[in-house]
Length: 287
Image (cartoon, rainbow, N blue to C red; front, side, top):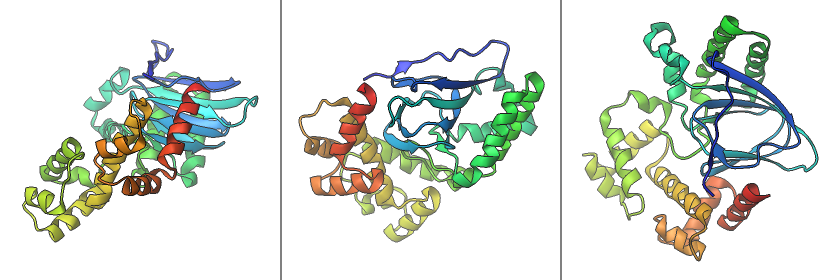
């Protein structure tokens, strides 16, 4: 199902927009919007389907959803109301002036690094909730200033944040040379092929041993783990489309040469089997 392009009803006279929802259930359709969304789940238990991953949520959880990330929240308990507070903002809108202010440029860089979203680690939820509550109570200039404090608080724990969707380079890679970007682009374009360690190491002009050490240092993942995540991401997209006759065909189309290996890697990354993923995906979209 193609995600609905959603228009956030934000007022024209505000750089950021906060809304608190108390509803019977979350918006039921897979959708996306240009704005970032920081959402605090105050009541509700269920799962978040976002791009190619599924994440459980419970009261107290806080997620940042990146710009145009397809997502939908589904509750486990029917008949029980849900409650959330969402903060919407877009660096391309009124906040674009941040890029021209040296004091705020680091905050804008932090936002751009979080395109794949993240879940706030439990030990930092209390502090983030505190800032969100302050934002709810403030207005105009005070609200904007407090928003910057919120971003500053989140940016301090950047190293602890894990992307919600897809594969992302480790935070320390950002300052690395162009070579790792070129290698990762090659993998993005050829992950369906049988890429050997010797082949990719040769492209990097390194020995296999040196390449493994370099790649792990730049991405935080081994070459095999990184390649497997690219392939599983593709498999999730194909499973969601539902155009294949069997899971084994999807496994091969995603770059795996063995259905057994595919099932093992899929379960190790997502924690569930491909069959259960398909069942859950359909339930989340159509329940």
